[in-house]
Image (cartoon, rainbow over all chains, first blue to last red; front, top):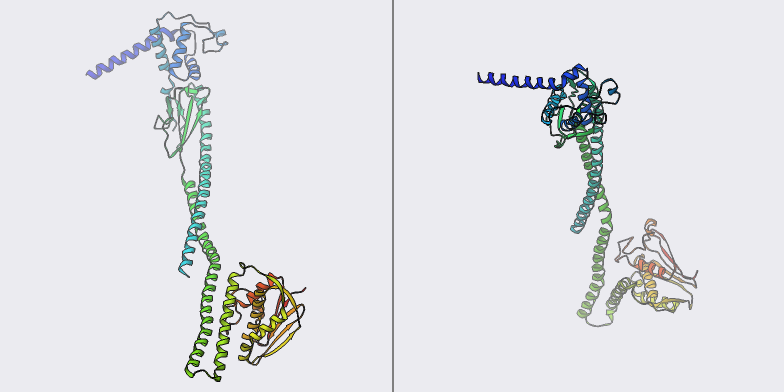
Amino acid sequence: MGKIILFLLLSMGVVAQEHKLKQDCLSCHKAQQIPSNLIYRRYLMKYSTDARMKESMFRYLKNPNKASSIMPPQFFLKFPMKKPLLLNDDTLKQDIQRYLDRFDVRNKLVLQR
Amino acid sequence: MLISEKRSLVRFLLIYLLSTLLLFSLASWIFYTSSEYHLLDSQREVLKYEAEGIKSKLREMHQSNDDILYYPNNKNVKSAIYDLDKKYIFGTMKDENNLKNRDKDTIYFEAKVEPYYLGAAFLLVSKTIDYEPIQNLQKSILLFMLAASVFFSILGYYLGRLFIAPMRESIEKMNHFIQDTTHELNTPISTILTNVELIEAFGENKNNMNELRRIEIASKTLSRIYDDLTYLNLNHQYHRDIIKINMSELLKERMTYFTSMAETKKLKLITNISENIMVYIDKNDALRLVDNLLSNAIKYNKYNGILEVTLTQKTLIVCDTGIGIKSVDLKQIMQRFKRANKSEGGFGIGLHIVSQVCENYKYDLSMKSEINKGTEVHILWVK
């Protein structure tokens, strides 16, 4: 019984975190049809590690501009430059981590049979 | 084989074989190291090729929007991808720390991935070393070393015997010389002692002339042996006093000296000696030359044979009717201790001394001989 309660609590926690990420980030991405997976892959291809990606994303989200963006200049012809987020640093870092976890390629890789 | 010979042969073989083995081992080791490197390098080439394939696959996966990304899985080749901090991302290698810890029985190839597809900055490809060609190489080298050892052992033994041959010959010559010397000395000494005993037994009278003659001949033989051996031993060391010598007088004097010996064989002496033939020569050399020629002509002559001595302004010819020398032995007869016929006593040094004297004074020495007919020795001192 205790285990079931613990499992339910953890599941609720995960769902709550997912909800927070959607609320803070992905809802706008979805509304503006911005390809989140494509952005993640571009970060991954350039920075390789989570730590480097986090640092770069944080820098961009705090002060969005073409120079610090991972996307090419042509991207901003179609999509407007986003405004700086009003989230505090800790929340922003948590959201970035959730974003990276959501698209992490490690979860998709399997051995070919 | 003598013990000293055996010891020398064993020492030579040991040094020869050890040095050869050392040299071959060194050459084989260099060859083995180089070949092993090339064999491993060819296996490493397979890894390089495989790495290029995986890189290409990584790019495809990176661009894919599929929910499942299939990482290439090769049974023979293991691989893993690592991020920029060398942290394991994914792969077919069981040990995630292979980028640092390497297995001895495995060859690795590390390739950089740029750009970082799927976050991979490093790709490590590995393969278990195929030891079969290396083991084959080891077997071939071992077989070669074995064959070379057998070949060089046989060659070394043959060379050793070849090098020892002159030593063996010298020892044999020395042994024969000692045997001949004791025999040569024993005969005249026995003659002297026997005849002295006879004189003592029968008292001194006119009939003792034969005994005295035998004592004289034996004493002269001893004296000649002594002179020849001394000459042979001191040939290169003593100072020669070259003076003008009346060879005619010297020859007559030595003929007289050998008369008693010639009489025992009842030889007929024919002398054609020109008067006052003068030759520049050391007196001892002249004596040894004449004495040895006359001694040989008497010793190897037949009973009732002829001894002919001719002296002219240019030549000295000594001719006998003795046993003769085979034509095959004529070329070697001048060598020290060489004896064409062992029926008579002697060391085989007489003609060697004659040839030495002729060589020292640049005289032409030639011999003609026929078995059972006789020998003729020509010495030409004026050319």
